[in-house]
Image 1: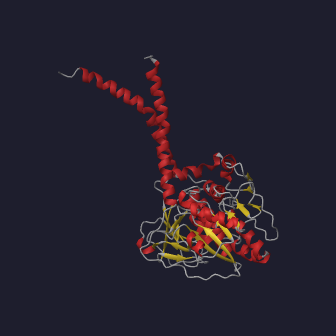
Image 2: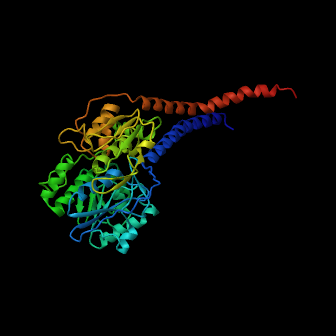
Image 3: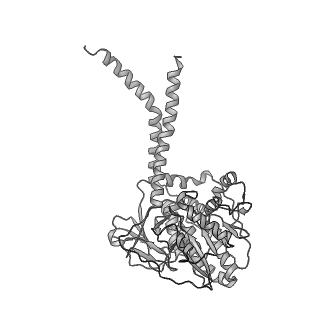
Length: 451
């Protein structure tokens, strides 16, 4: 054997271990984060079917829920806006009746199943809203993709929110059309689905009977456009004034231009917080009956699903909470919860919810005039974790960055965990040499041992 080969083998092994060991640790961390982000809350209490009636004078709108999880703001944002108008009958549809996960630790109960739509128990949707699914091409989601194609083939309007465009790309709906999606997905979609013309830097793209929006919060302004189109400018202005999404103008039907974002080194808080979840603080997300869906989505997705600054546990006085427009969310009864570091209660200016030892933050009470549900949460993140973390979170929900406290906080937890990952890399690189030296030291002792 050439004399250089053992040394070369050790060098190659050192490099591999220096990369593989920290990569495995970061992958494990990301798995923990996603597990928390899409955790399903369970309840022992039987949840009755939602009692409701539908009117033939209204446009039936089905908001789809992925069987394995969907992005909360993609679902709750358009649901909030459209359900606020009497022009629409809005309901959720999933593959089955089981509770399904939304990002930020939320869990919702579908109003209907795909089978309900097929057998007439639920109305035939004339608009279908498609959020980002955790598994857009998965077999579990096939019935939802079939429903999308059915609505499209029968003359309905298909609307994707954010990476919901990936779900549409797994059907024939986008063939030969123009579309948009979440900014970080567009280059990949251009490569994997060249049959569609992918457009960046716009809030939405309307191509005939298909509408696609940009990332996450863009679904809110996209839904306002639908209200404007089907219910009129006055109705859109009314709902827009309540929602207060920055840049919405009910006097125009043109999609607003937005920055065509790219991944940059400044995005490091997103990567670090997503892959280093250990020793996070635990926040209770206090849910109350009648809360606006957008307010819930803002807190859940920003703290737990984009900034990744906390482990979010939905809590409430009882296991099932009904939002302002009838969506049912599951929560852990607050008297069963202990050890929370903080309690965040969105959408209210006062609350009776409390947990021993947990500070209470009410985003609505901290809101400024003209704020949407996202602004006070982003300011809070800037105060607790730093301006860079909050600005990056806003970028990853494609929300205009508000005026934020200029806090340059050191994230000691992230700094310590990053140091531990670097130490793992160093130990991995040194392992082959350390093992070789240990073996060499043991050989003389073995050779001199008495027979």
